[in-house]
Length: 214
Ligand code: CTP
Image (cartoon, rainbow, N blue to C red):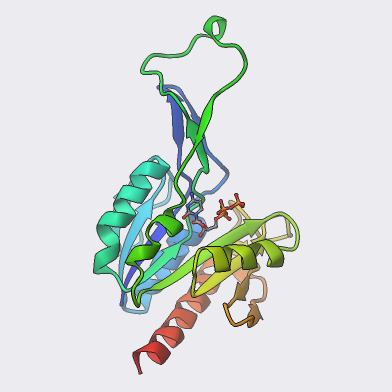
């Protein structure tokens, strides 16, 4: 299969020296790319600003902002059968970018923000019979919020986790996730390395794909 994966944070610049972003390191998305490639799939990885090496055999596209990530997804999605949206996309960006450094004397303590597009929702019309998988990183029990996102974004399944749980979340090498499906099925995966979790996610995608292909 041809699998498109987004990973890492996006970075929303305010001026040449400052930006708004989040704690994502890209580890889960890069582990997915590595696991998918190891299973013989063709992988395109759209990566926000992270410091990770590209897994062998994976085609990487680097972007910085949410708008650039949306452009890259719209460009590459048609050539893929699966889209895994693992990126922690910044929901807001500064309304105005200053090409010169902002000076504190000229600021009043507020930054005007505008909403970024929801990438999954924006490319939903391109879904056809492609498989879409999302992530929901929450603080606390993620089930209710993850189920809302699963339904609102029209996903085939969502990978939910509590980023405050021991061994889970950003920058760790392990994760503990729950897979939630539209028919209400849930599957709790035990605490494991991000690569093991990624391999399990890829195998669920392969199973779903072989069912829909029949
Ligand atoms: N996502 C996206 N575009 C955005 C924000 C999120 O495509 N602008 C995707 C993420 O890659 C993830 C899923 O949507 O697969 C859920 O992201 P998350 O940040 O958990 O939720 P939000 O949709 O931003 O909702 P909220 O702010 O209410 O948590």
